[in-house]
Length: 403
Length: 204
Image 1 (cartoon, chains in turn brown, cyan):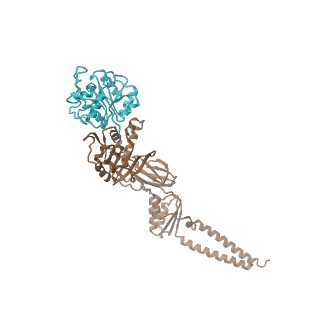
Image 2 (spheres, each protein chain N blue to C red):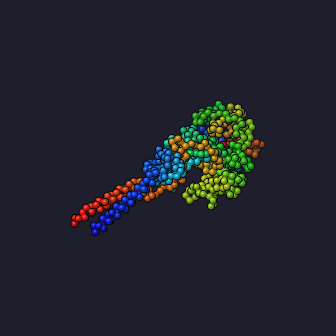
Image 3 (cartoon, rainbow over the protein chains, first blue to last red):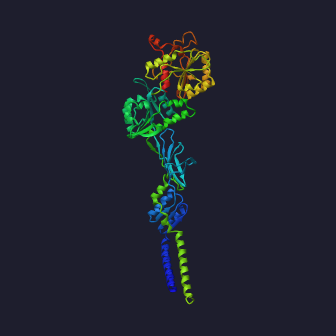
């Protein structure tokens, strides 16, 4: 029995020694690997890995924030040079896109995406502009003309984007019978900075114009507003205009004209943009390269005249928003923003997606569990087993004559 | 169905606002006769100081007596013009030294700014009928009453490039204050400039 126990202990000692020898060989192989367990990557570590005589065979990163654009490019270069770069960490995906608003006062629309219920803060170079809690994976912000680059922050992740384009706007043409609605529609748009031509039918064959109405095409007009049946004689020209990219807004009396039937935003192609109760109040459809918005509102001038202090501003906003949504507004490229010297960039729209594209998806926790501190724990455990087995075997032999 | 144009005569507290009661019907007749503008068959009289005035972006004011707005009338007149409406004020005395003219000028200067002469090539003289010499002369300007002058210009308070308040010393209130059926005796309809005023108000 004692002899059998001594054999078992000797076997355990030999097995433990073999295992420790294997770990030692693994350790010498990993001696060339780099382990980073820090917040971010760090320029010094990147420098060190890049300047080493032999590139690290394995770089395992524990990330608590998304590396900057330059750091990601650096890691991608290390991976391309032969190092296996892996990472893990619970980083929050966040992205932002910004595009110019097609309106004379400028401004931009920023759309941010992050996981549902995330609290996000949008800001520009001056500071925070607004905040929101994400619903259905996204949030939209309308920004003033002063903001041409934005950052969005969510749970430590930062995405940034800069306007790449501005828009080139043409005039707006308002067509209607002489009356308050055409007059105040044109006034609302002019007050918002649009250049407006008004074509007001006063008598059969007689049209009173303001501005200098010209041929309806996209070289002259960004959008046309058809307020009533006075627009019917222009239906075929309006169709060509919209197919070429122009925008058209149709009010109910214009939509009722038989000649306007192909231009109506109705049927399966139409998208409902706004409802009042069960009734659709604003619908849109695409026609060729252009867009049509059909509204159910009539006599909007009454809200301007009768409303409170903000009535005029609301009336302007109603019409400029409608026109902005359909306006033909070809993009004009702006000067490209350069990355900042500190490695941050004004245009880093989806940093986590870019990290994944650069060095791959995050590794699972199980793969990493065999490395790092866990290996030293195994070594201590094995040394304990070895010591206990040796002591047991020696003690057994010393006490062999004692019974 | 778009709303139709309704000719509105403004009631004000200080004077005889209803001194030309047939004028609205005559102008309405001319609008219907010469244009396709949807126009209500009869006009309305609305207190300038009431909120109902904002249903009528064009308001006609006239009288012989001293002209002064109450606080509510002044507030509404400013708001109506600021929001894009237009006032047409005609001196029924056709007298630039008379009480209506002097008090109306004071009131307009107080409520808006001092009216300025409207150039005789202004759009209002060309927007429908053509009046190459500016405002048409009225038969009442030289009738021995008032200042006995032919007034060469109308005055206006401008809102940017648009007329906010049109002021006349021509006494169109007398010239146009007759039954529309009497037009058949005229070789030239003298209310044609009234059509221009309405077309201008509706399109500028």
